[in-house]
Length: 202
Ligand SMILES: O=C(O)CCC(=O)C(=O)O
Image (cartoon, rainbow, N blue to C red; front, side, top):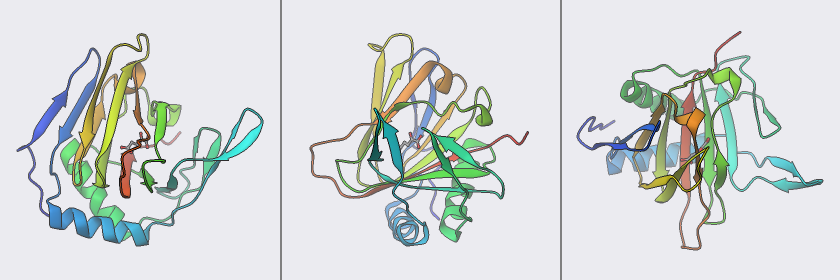
């Protein structure tokens, strides 16, 4: 796996925002191979959300892969852990190396086209601890990744995430900021994002 660690590190600035972007953590052939393997290995599921009394499909496919016993409830959906696959384990090693952290779980997202996205949220569930280190790898179509401050929505920043990029979020990022992948009218292909986390066992 080709990693160009450090060559293209960028920090994304803002008060209390602690985010590092590693551009091209996977070079194009490695990113292409990872995308192809993850697309078929991961048991992608369509989850549903209860909203205003009706049940709506989540605008993306998902899978929760984790060590045994690590359940995760997100937006009212209880995710039962699926087993690790070889390509996910390889991505975990890359992200753990870049972040200097260990991860026992990953939320996998498949954005099928521009109608898929994820709305403003923070990965601030209690099981991740107060200031978690979260690392995610982006593969496939380029999509915008936005941040806004919790206490002042006019304070915003964002970045385009490309095939092979890794983002590391740390410190007070989840406490003071929200993030999202907005839907887009642009014609975009599939994108896979794997967001690695460490669930603290009680
Ligand atoms: O797709 C991404 O880059 C972000 C996904 C995300 O925010 C999440 O899984 O919590």
